[in-house]
Image (cartoon, rainbow, N blue to C red):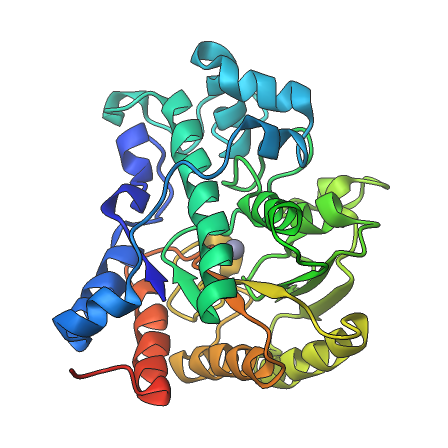
Length: 339
Ligand SMILES: [Zn+2]
């Protein structure tokens, strides 16, 4: 199943935020599916997006209620939280990658969009449970921490959805497989000590937090480990798929009796054509990126674990290619094309 809605195309430039995250990243893969699937198949394989499944109480179970209150307060209070999450001010207090003159929408409105995104993530989890597989063309805000947003992630939809799923269904365990280029640090911190959410993150070594000063702060929340962290250092691209396979092998014993659901944080930013400077240490070819997705997909399918996939990070004009390749493979693999 796929979930896509134009409302999920958060164009950061509309808010004056100058980060190369473009609507084409999800618009083009959605158009690709439209082209490849017949009308009948589209009706069977797309489910309409629900924007209202996650509310304040769900957020307060995962995030600091005081932080949640600041987001719901709106106005200047929420705006400050967005500025922090998107790192729009430099150390001297000057605007950084933010141009108010280019904004057509107020920054604080991003909270409502991110709340809707979290609803989509939860919907993807429910749909996956029912149908075995669901890919949401959105989501994956894995850097958001307990009391603040970070790394372009305002609230952590991954943990919010996993927690809501565990409470609202009979599920006992959710696995999070994070293959974004950056460490799923918020997810790791928010689920530390929880046995019902098991986390694997495969990411660039020495790259998160981005600044060495933060990496040097003992006890910094971003340094809290995932259940399994696999680091790929600069120049080790050839090792990536083997390291991912090892990480998945190590996940197995942490899932005695399996898992009721896996959330896959399927960032396209390890791709060699990604344009965000902080992803430059990982440069996987399109072929390797497809192998990555197939490996995770097969791992979960062989174990009968339903999976909800999220687009997560991906920057520049080429990130859509990764999802299109995976969808193309999936359509052939699952025989879902044609009438
Ligand atoms: Zn990323």
